Image (cartoon, rainbow, N blue to C red; front, side):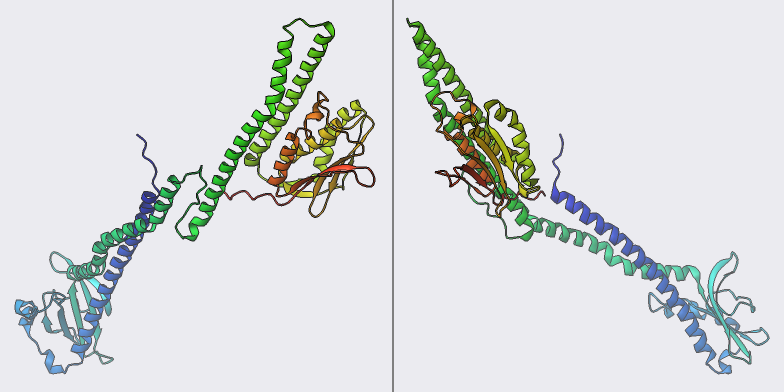
Length: 451
């Protein structure tokens, strides 16, 4: 069974992993620092003892062969960090004046300053600090410390420095875990509200008041709004289908039924012609309904983008050039070289095709039909003709079913609304005799940013 990824577990893993790495580096640096400081401390202790003893008078260093065991008495041990130092004092010729401590006597020629030498049988390392009393070289002193004892002290100090990290780590890890869970609580609240959101009723999404959630909430609300718009469009489209197809289908059924009875040749020819006209009208209605459905679908699927409205108009005119030639119309384009806008190119092509088809279908042969691109602002697409006639009741070709039945107008109005604009039809010819349909563009709604 595949385990569902969890943002909380992933965030905790990264946080605790980073904490463990940082803590390990801290422990290592702390331990090495403790060892270094302990070494500095013991070396400083050796030098301090040597300086203190050299400051004493000459009588203090009379020959005492038994003095070596003085520093080994248990009753003199008063502190855990008290070290067993050994002292050797020579005169200027190398004769031992006195010794104290457990260390074997080092050679008189031991180097000045700090050094590590092997002494005794078997040989063991000792840390030594040796120096003369001055330029007269009347006395020479060496202070010694067992290197194992020195290392043990360094380990103890380093351990004391690093030890707090060992018990603080689980406490910090626990606090971080609780903090991450508490910090992600608003995300869980938002997830629960999204799951409980009833997208069919359009209720607003009440999100936690955190700035990080606003873009996500905006995207969800935009998606919900588009879904509700799609549902409304589907319901409206279904109602339009039922309403627009009811009349031509009833007429088809009536005239098809009349063919079963006894009819005169003229009546039969008239019935067949009526059937053919009703079939053409039904096909035109279906084309418009499919265009309407496509406009609704592309409204959700196609993002607004920069486009050249003049190039789009010329492309649609080229598509209808043959149809205009066949029907005897004069089809022209009046547009600037370029007209950049921001919109849905496929939707605008659908709208312009409907307007051009309507003009070609509602005007007699020889009429002039012109596609105009008005740069604005605001920019607009206009289709005008000089001799428009009422839509035919029966037949009339593809164009007769567009604006005459209201479906083409509904297609164009919906596309205008998608672009934040409007669709206007001139009620009467202007002074030059032109009648026009104008689709004015506004600002299309912005798509939500991806996250």
